[in-house]
Length: 177
Image (cartoon, rainbow, N blue to C red):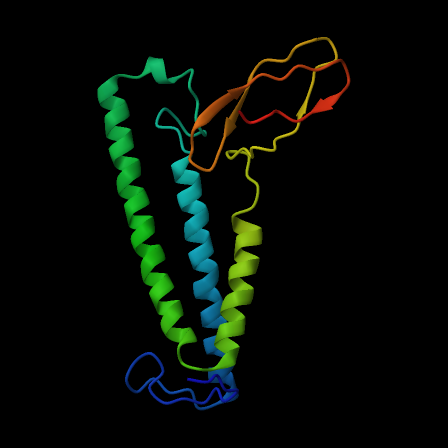
């Protein structure tokens, strides 16, 4: 199996779907890039839904959990699980379609998929306000000697408490224990 630079193909993805001109080739490369961007968009949506609070329209809010009944929270969790499942199904279908496009041995599809996945990850799955890095830099308040413990979320989604002591007007990195 070798990749080639000939875009003109018969039976592309489906029977009687032929790429016979430069416009068809360009359109199929754009379609390949679109599928790759949609995959990254679905990953971003899944990341958002994973961190979405069941108590409101904002990421994880522990203070408002006590205000809702357990039944309401269970219903919202179930609804979010249904939405996340549908997003996962769409993501899997798009991934398989993209795989079939790349397997047509045209190097343009491979490059367009890789470039679009990289651009999509950079634009759609970057640093968001609802995610926190373990390397989060905490700038201390000039009036306090000791700051409050900072919640740090690691890759396993465990919440660790890391006490941070600072002197006024200094920057520190919390130590992940």
